[in-house]
Image (cartoon, rainbow, N blue to C red; front, side, top):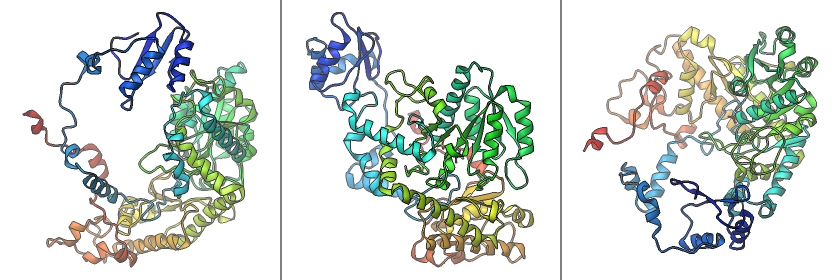
Length: 568
Ligand SMILES: *Cc1c(COP(=O)(O)O)cnc(C)c1O
């Protein structure tokens, strides 16, 4: 054994025989162990391994069993301190109790099961049950990422098909399924671009241009990939400022590595200059990285590869239906043009990709959730994927039109249309009444809705993305809520409601507050709790009221048992 201390993985240097012989002997017992060179073998154990399995592993090594209890091996490393002492680990001791506990936690969450989640840039679309089924199958869920290729033919077929489909959707020659998130895709894509420049003897190209309106992950990824970020301006209409772009490209021409551009832009607009933008960057030897987070506005009707991009990532947890409430797990594969295929991320254990280093521990990232996107694409088919895109754009434009009379839409493209999302502007409202976007976001909870994206990419605005999954009735319900909130703002505007104590700044309202005998607010309880007809039939009660954001972030309240309890 190579190490005195270990956790779950043991590497054994062989005294006799070869690693291949041990691997073959283990395989005969249906056990996968990993050869490390010719003379060492690595074995990982988990809680499902039985004594009989251990005996089989030992037999594969040609070693005899031992009577020594497994506990002995833990020796000095066995834990003696108490653990899992929090009452919550002991309070729910039957399946019934556990079920109720989990259901209680779930009920505090406003999810797609309650109402639309119009979070712009997040594409909170339906995660269909049928798409989710295969995740539960052991054929997908119980396979190790390094399982020998001979045992993973089904997975390989799925990877190949999904890669082909995603290449078709993006108009690219090659796809890497390795990145685990959009941001990781950005990092991977920029590494690919760096390798490409290096291979052409242009190691000095390290400047990455990023428009002002970009998602925060863009500059972060560029810095992590070792590039120098240069920000380019956006004009009054929210579009890339072409004069500034030209100037920056000229200025950094010799060092230009890449431009990162989101299309349609994070302003929710198809920028008409996008082909020209790509051409300018190419003229100066740079590569175009397209942030594909807004692909829900393009699938089936336009392709990054045709527009002039060289690389783009896809957020499978946005456009391709992997559920992503609560932050994951997601997948951010990248597509690349032909000249970049040799530089796709590789992997030290499994032969995959090209000459860039691995960006994930596993060769195909979070492979077990890829069936969700596979199912989505397979069940939809090409024509329906295009139809979904059209409906997503139609829905966003419908909402933009209905809300325009109440909140101005900040940016529009040609023909006054938006893409698959729109930004509504509340800055003038704040100036006139002191009511902020945050107040509207909180008040939406009383109406039973999740807030849109707040203050991204423009501070003081809300970015709304309905997706194709919502019916006209649901879009109208959300618009009705926003319009009713505008009327509540008007009460402050005209002095009917106080600026300091009104239904908006005190939102959201909990059930406890609303039924309390100590209600002293200047507005009615009914107005607080049941502001729209549907809330009387289907009320979502926020469980906590507002915690002032920055103060809350700086003053953590722990649900732990008090520290005194540990003192004894
Ligand atoms: C979501 C998003 C990202 C980052 O993707 P993750 O999967 O969250 O890492 C990047 N750019 C844009 C425009 C996005 O909306």
